[in-house]
Length: 464
Image (cartoon, rainbow, N blue to C red; front, side, top):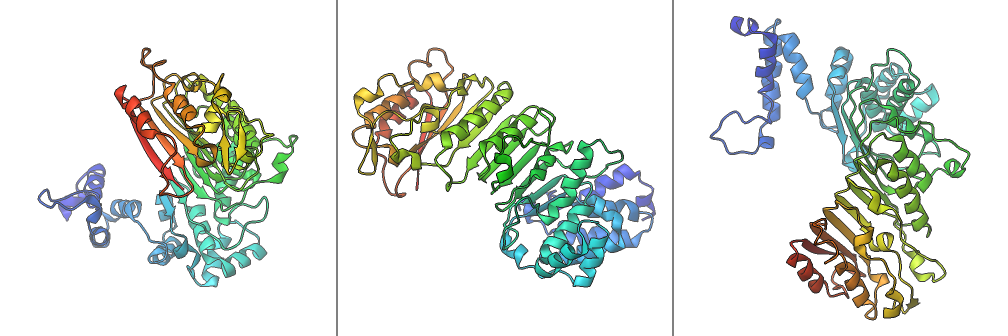
C-alpha cells in the first residue's frame, strides 16, 4: 500500500477509473462492456477508500463520479450519504429517469427527513413543500438531487412523472432550481456557479407550459434541448406578450419539441433565441385545429435565421382534418430550398408540395390529371445539398384516380437534378395507411426502381 500512495495523483485517478465496468480488463473474456459486475467494481474501490486514509480523497472522488444509482432501489442510501458528505453532490453528472411506473409508485423517505432536506434547498414555501412530500415524494427526492447537483451535465426526465396536470404557468417541482439559476445567469448575477456544465436536457413536461421554460436557453453550456408533451399557454397567443429571452443569445444547437401543443409563435421564438441551430425537430400533437399550414410557415420563416447552419429538419403539423374541407386552399410552405446546409429533411408531402386541386369523394381526395398541371416539381422545392428525404404520404389524400399524379411528382426529381449531381442519396416514404396491412395505392415498385437506377436508396414504411 505504501507504494500506491507514493504514486502521483493523476496516475491514481487512471488506475481507479480502470475499475469502471465499461473497461474490459481481461482480453480473453468476450463479454460486452455493460455485462461487468459494476457492484463488485465499486465495492473494490470502496474498500480501498476505507483501507488507506491517504488514498481516500482520490478514490472517493472517482467512486462518486462513477456511481450509478437506481431510483427505487439504491437511491435512499445514496440520498442519505449526501447528508453525511454534502460535497459528493457536486460529483453528480447524469440524472436519467425513463420508467414512469417506478417513479410514480416510489414511496420516498420519511417525511421528516425529506422536510429537513428540502429546507436546505430553498425551493418552496412550507405549504407547497408539505403537499409535495405527502402526495408526490418522488418529486421531492428528485428536486433535492437536482438542486444539489450543481455540476450536472445531463438531465433526462423521459417518464410521465405525476398523476395530475400542472396548473397553467407552473413548472415541474424538480426543475425549479435549474430555471432559477438560469434566470440569475441571464440577469448577469455574479458568482452563479450552478449548472454551468449542463449541456443536455430531455424533459417530458407532461402537457404543461410556463414562460419560465424560456430561461433554460440562458444556460451557458446547454447544447441539446428536447421538450416532450409541451402544452399550450394562452397568454402567449397575445401578440403583445414578449418572449423573455433576446434573439440569437442561446448556445443551443439541437432543439426538439415532440408531441407539442404550443403555437407556431412560441416555437418560432425558441428558434430565433438560438445563435446557430444545426438540428431541429418539431412534431405537433395530432389533436389540434386545422391550422397546420400557417403553423409550419411561422416555423420555417424563423428557421431562415439558421439557413447556413441547419443540417437536419423534421417537421410535422399533425393535423389532417383540413383534407375534407374543400374551402381550405392548402398551398405548400415556401422557402425550404433556401437551407443550403441541410442534408436531411423529414416532412409530410402536403407541407413540401401542397395539395393539388380536386374534390373530396367517398373518404378520398380526388385530383384528376388536369388539376396537376402547373404543380411544382419536387426538385424545385428541395434544399440544394439534401442527402436524405423522408416524405410522409397520407392514405386520405389518395384515390385510384390520382395515383399517377403522385408517382409523377415523386419521379420529377429525375432527370432534372441527376445531371447536376445534387439529388438526394436516400428517399424514405412513410405511407400512413388505414391499417398496417394495407398496401399503398401508388406503384411504389416503379418509384423504387427508378430511384435505385440512379444510385439512390429508396424504402417504404407503412404506418397506421
